[in-house]
Length: 189
Image (tube, rainbow, N blue to C red):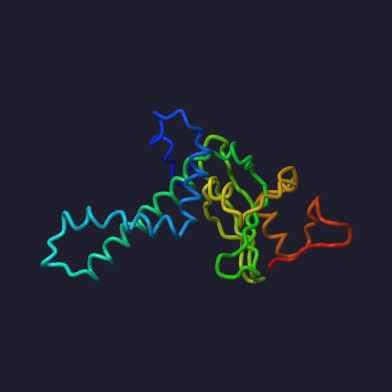
């Protein structure tokens, strides 16, 4: 299962793609990078825009959007050039992510499939409430590798359970993770 694979863009480079992804992550996370790109575009945009038809505010909006697109390219390359083997993601692994909206919330996923040569994994999201079932979605391997909000617990990969069942039982609280201290069972978020 490949969500997107952009490795072919780098077929003529000798750079390690994990290093390229790490650099793209730094650029993506840098507000200063986006500001510098917007500033650098000033002369180029003015060279091609009809400055009589477009005022300074419209030009600024165009430049800032172009800078966001450059940052978006860094996001895509970070996420889509690293393989599951690079991150050591396998079926049954538990991925935990701190929510970007609420740093107090941890979102948990169980890997359903992770071809070592692909750049993404299919996961089941551990439900938030009793009336939900685990939902399937995708994650880019590079996102998991480079974004500090993610951690991977590999202790669930050898359980004799389907990933859907791991996700469901994690929420219900009737699954003891191999790395949990004795007497503690973690229920969903």
